[in-house]
Length: 328
Image 1: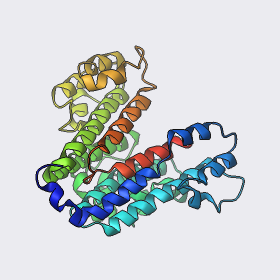
Image 2: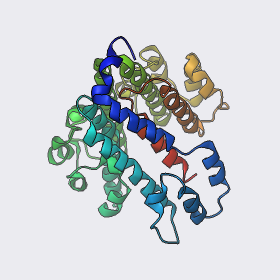
Image 3: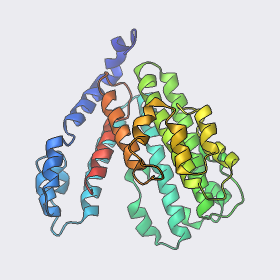
Image 4: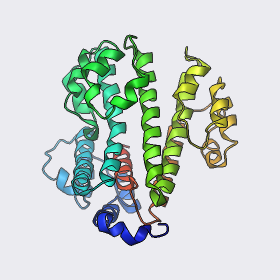
């Protein structure tokens, strides 16, 4: 921490920091993962997890188990911990915790709209939504036919409403427009979250700025790669890139004109923090890029614990990583 920040931090944040440190001790260890790798059935996984903090959430589940059941119950543990922290938090930490939900809300909106477009059952889609991204009128998303209706009927009363101003158009909802909507919403969300963390200052601004900049850069790379060979123009790409991050603005200008994965690699290797990620790729290969970015994200989250935690979203993000690893 910086200056006199540490002198008053414990007045409002001391208890929740202790809770965060306690959650860290409950994360799966390398030994846990080694044991899980030896499991031959899902019941073996349940038996091993019974000795961890996930145990109480799985103990009453009957056999046969399914992968989705394990992930659902482990996610429930994460949601319970989040809700406990939110009820104990005061401003500005409570607002910070609310920001963490917005990304899941965006993903849920896209999931429902895309699934409805492809005539999937709404109830089935709702079951696949992340619990942290749920809101009261989410089921009504199925009736929207274009961006304006999506905003007017559903999103106007949600925290996503301010981010939707750049998405509103009369265009029909098709796969391309939905993906553009997702990236536009994420851009607005990340920039808003970044500004909020900058206003908080101190360790929060330092650590969260790095984590959010990394996310903005990762999304810029993914947007570039996924738009290669599509009708998305260079100007369209630029509009979807966040206005901060290590790649902003010159790296983004290079990405905007890339026409294949090798050109993306050439642009990214000019930035030392990303050289190690792209060095794992052979030329023309992009399949393992997501995994390489994911591993780098986990490293940054773990390193952030070396400081006294301010408002970082570390416990929730790292717990999410642990849950993501289970199905693998």
